[in-house]
Length: 303
Image (cartoon, rainbow, N blue to C red; front, top):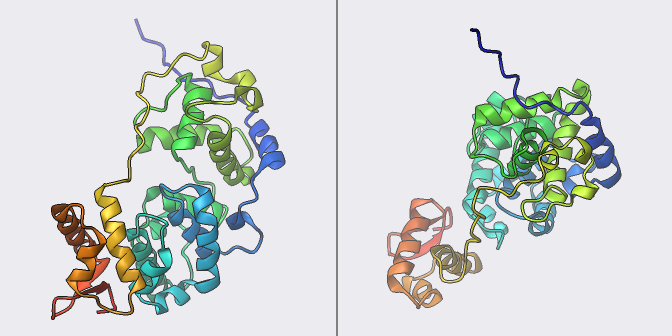
């Protein structure tokens, strides 16, 4: 006997309700303002990787003021970018943005390219960022999936409490099905709305289902809101980690005017010499710092 084809989870036909909700509640984030350029949106997307919005806003405004175009950042040094990155975390992102700006100037005449394929070819730009820039900067109808979108789709469409392990093919297909419930010209805004919904309402630990615009058609609620099967993600500690050691060493070099002797770095992290050496080696390997012929250390490009 021929088996019937399983059509998969039924897509709620009224995801326009998410758009209406977003129209009323959208956060006033600076990179969403009129007049913000694709380059400035690209900068925001890189800064927002693994970093809360509240920590990014002031830094993004400063970078926009200082380097409003790719050419402006490309004309600076990598050390300038790392120094300006301050305490935002994961400073390799500063170097990647600098390399990205240089590539945009060299290969695209200083203009951010529009397609996902061209964006992916830029240094430091991965699939999510390429799609986010194509969608939010250029209004292209391409699915954009982050952890917030994955959680909304898992609950509202599949009826699961937790998003499964990431799968680009599955996640993009699921997002595309939802986006196709609204007119094409509204799909970029729906992508932003789904992210906002996951960030503010359909949260991992304490979802506010009563405020959700799709609660009436939510498959998870219809199933009785079963508990999740994925263990809660452990909060990564910072105190005493290699990341903190790296940060302390970078603090010394950001504050210095040029190269510093090894002794200055030794004083910055005295609690564990092996950890300090490991942190120093990793900074050199990542290209964030360099060593001079006479054994001193500096931010890359300042030796």
